[in-house]
Each structure stands twice: as C-alpha cells, then as structure tokens.
Length: 265
Length: 165
Image 1 (cartoon, rainbow over the protein chains, first blue to last red):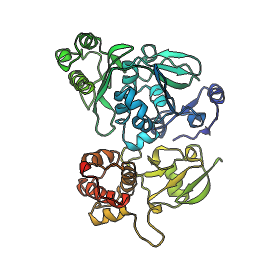
Image 2: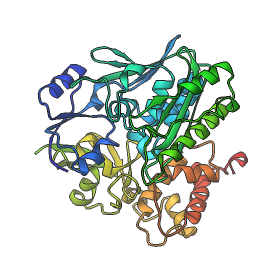
Image 3: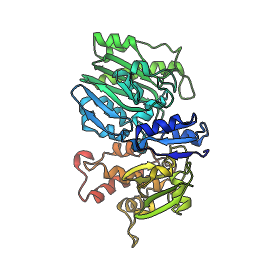
Image 4: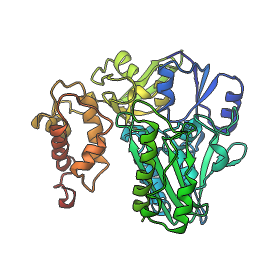
C-alpha cells in the first residue's frame, strides 16, 4: 500500500472541505472494498478521509420512509427490527453481504458510492426506488447508477443517507454468490411498493445494476414465479468471466428472479 | 508520524503508525501479538479475525488509525491468567477442531462472536454459514462445527435450545 495521510473529520462540512482540497483525496467508509484496493496499489490517494466520525450511522422509520444513514453497517441493517418489519427483503440482503466480519465493517453508503457491478445494495436501492441523499441534493435511484463503478456523485460529494419509500408490500432478494468473494454472480431484487413493481439485477450486467422491465410488466399483471419463468434476458450486455459465461448469467437471472418472487410471497 | 491509542486485551497502548499501517500489523509487529495470523491478505480467509468493540472483524482490512480508542481482543486475550482456556478454545481441543492450526485463532475469534450473538441457539447450518468468512484447508470443517456447537452451552451456561439443534 502506498502511504497517505489519514484524516477523521467530525462534520460533513469538514469532510467535504478535506475532499475538495485535493484531487487525490479519497473518502473511506467501511473500507471492505477500498482497503483491498489500496493494498493492490490500484489507487494512490494523497489523503484518506474517514467518514466514521460524521455521525451518519443510524436507522429511522417514519410513516412514509425508512431512512438509513450512510455509515450504517450491514450487520446493523440486517439486525434492525424496523428494517425487518418495513422491508424484510432489504434486511435479508444486508445479512447476506460478504461474511459476518465484512458486515461488521461495510456500510450502505460505501457500497453505493463504489457501485461495484456485483454489489448487493444497488439491486435493492434500484428495485425499491430509493433516494440517495447527499450533502448537496437528493438523487433518485434511476438517475444515480451510471455504469460500472460510476455514479451521479460529483467529486467531493458525500452520501449522507438513503431513503426507501414506504409502504413496501413485497420485497425479496435472491443471490447466486461467487463462493470465494461472496459477491453476486447474479443477484435479483424484486419489489412491489410506492415505486411500482420492479426487478433489479446485479452481478450480471456489464454496466452494473439494471432493471429487467419485461419481468416487471409480467409481475405487475400476475405476481408469481411462473409469470417470469419464460422471460429470458439477452446475454449481449452481460459479463462473462472464469466464473460464468454471459449465457450462464442470463439463465441465472430468470432462476434467481423466480426464487426471489417465491421468497417475497 | 501519527499515533494511535487503543486497548488490546485490557492493556492500553499508544503506538506510532503510518496512515497505511493495518491493524494486524500493529498487533503482530508493534505489540508482538503474533497469535493473530495473516493468511490471504485479501479479506477472504479470516485468519486475522479479532474483536473490535465486541464485533469480529478482519484486522487485515482495517487501518490501525480506524481503531483509535477501540477495545481490541485477540486470541491471546481469551485464556485466564492461570492458563484456563476459554470454553471455545477448550472445545476446539476436545473435538480436534484443528490440524495445522493456522486458521485456528481467526476461527476461534469468529466462533466466539457468533455464539455470543445468538443466545437463541444455533443450528448446524447457521454455524456453517456463520463461519463463512473463515477458511480452513485441513479439517473439512466438520470438527470445527462440532466444537462450536459444544461451546454454545458452556458460553451461555444452559443447554442448547432443542429447536436450534
């Protein structure tokens, strides 16, 4: 790892100022992706700005939204009675990210800011029509994810929370994980809520998370695994690697969608 | 050079570190606590698992400076001063849950956290899933799972609930 100076600001304004002071400054949330990236010398930041002291962790439930603070750890989301009650599929997803140790450190804001094409959270955020709240503005999930490791965030912009609209009638996530990394080879989140019926796919697309709109239309007409059984996804824009071909991932999308729909009930 | 102050196994230390220094490097190289192992160094194997403020974490995937003010427990902090082993260590010995021993410190630290956080009991499947972040290349896991199940009643001072077995 290249060396850097470490900073732990205690206010969002100070963090933004530090990140803005230097083009090579980087934000650190849980570090479960960022620290391995640093170890591989894939990134050479001048400053690492730890967001853990900003007071952004926490979960709150209001009448029409579940708000999760950006530095809330996966384990806290998985264990939250509020999340389990309001959006059970989201709690289950958080409880399946990585392993126990990763879930004790990794954060929702870090996952979304990184937008790994095989990360789990983007599927939930897109399927549930959540809003990403930053120090500057609110960004709809449909506008936020802009391709592999690419988001609508501007330099120096920090996610402060994620707001999930309620009530959510149905939610579930099914993941076929890569057994060593536990990232999704294919993960499908299905939801029925204020954003309508949505099906979001992670792990498969070359451009990261995407909506499977043919499945959404079929589910809107009839919510059952059989409704999507015959719907195929084109392999043209899917990832192909040593773990699985694009055609294999295309097949898995339908399989995982059926499992998620069955789990959502 | 920046400094980090942390409590390890009940003892407070202040150590000079670089920004890039990992928690596991402080434990092994600065404090001489070499029971915590470095296996894969890519966050996958779990040989480096320690407890930070009561949660099991991979100490190779945490900067030392992130542990400022933290309470850290390593494998060296489990046994009593008279040498009496922690029940999880004792059950690993009893059930032959180790062969080469390389993964054992991380496995024991993960297992203690898992058992402590499941007072309602653990099924065999839950134990296996709960140890997902720890790789063992010798045992086939079978005796590790048996040891963890055997440690549960000792740690909670009651029988494992029947529904969880």
